[in-house]
Image (cartoon, rainbow, N blue to C red):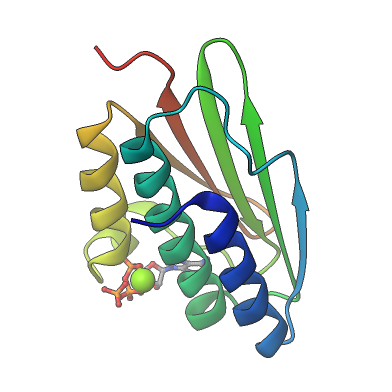
Length: 128
Ligand code: ATP
Ligand code: MG
């Protein structure tokens, strides 16, 4: 599996190569987080950024990582063309893959399309 820090390094290179400006806020050093959760988050981040590069036409991509008492929230925003969630989920395997992996760790994916696309990827701190 991959740690979030390594994945952030890689996706930064991918975004640079695609000439998409990237910003990262928050710490990639996750506190009290099982390795499985970190691996799942890394895979989600990778697919989210692949989609930004492949589909969005964005000029910027912002990634934020927030840990609270309740959960870890990974946000991936791009300022591209946006998407229609229902149509999009049936087009490929990437977004469905994110949802399926998140289920293993009781996480959730929600997608917003406004001035681009935002994926909110949440994993609760306590795995029930
Ligand atoms: P793959 O199975 O290789 O991931 P895919 O990328 O087409 O194929 P998904 O990752 O599930 O499949 O994405 C589904 C669809 O949602 C895409 O085909 C695209 O139309 C749309 N989409 C996904 N991410 C974005 C984005 N950031 N901006 C605009 N459209 C997007
Ligand atoms: Mg994809």
